[in-house]
Length: 307
Image (cartoon, rainbow, N blue to C red; front, side):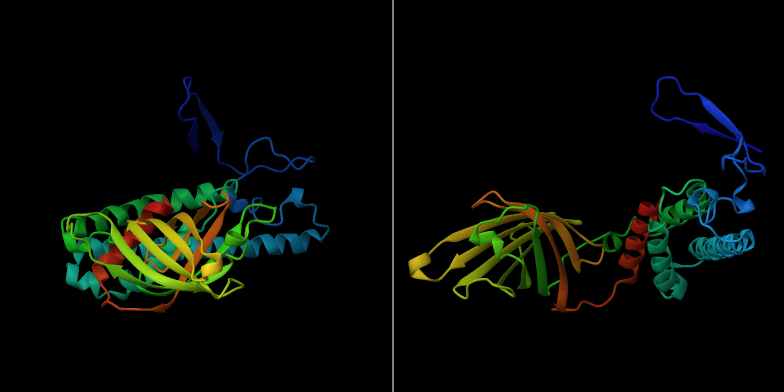
């Protein structure tokens, strides 16, 4: 069988044809033509790893890794094909009550997202096996729920007690306002807007440091979210009259799909320092009842990310 490898976004596109067949490795460890993936040559340990072990042991390890890969592909393909069958034949109520759709598929989609795309030949094998099935699942979910406004992907930051951790990107000593910004907690609550058609959701809260900040300082926290994008303004205020100062910090980041974690970068206006920041929900506030339809749409987002 011949498979074309076409370079995209080039003025002179040419196709390189490689035969997919077994070939013996040459003495230098290279082959004249790429060997078949099922031959085991691409599984760890490869010849270039320089592992000084008996050939019989190396062959056994490769066979074990090859069987794990084959079992994973078989299980994933069967689960995706069963998902396609459910999405094609079942009603929305049956889909929402299916353990396959609500429990297994989200975990499976997350696992597919974690498959590295840089492993020679093996990544291509995963792509050829999974991409048609993953694409089909995502399209069917979109077709089922795209017309329902209540089922659209509504990503909101969860209310409750958040713990945030900041790490400066500068090797030099920062000023006192940001040097102590290591770990702090914020109690967040959602605020309603007068503009009902706004695409932004506003959260406000107050917090305190969990590390070495002055006990005379308090934190004012305002966040605006739109989808997974979140922008935050922090303001540390000193209640000490002898050292009255404000230390505003601007944060730009992203939320995860369930709104319980964030990652981003901060900028301290007082001294111009920057760094990374991350946070997670420690104690949830108001817990809304689960919406299976929205969860399926989030699963669709994971499937699209896997592609």
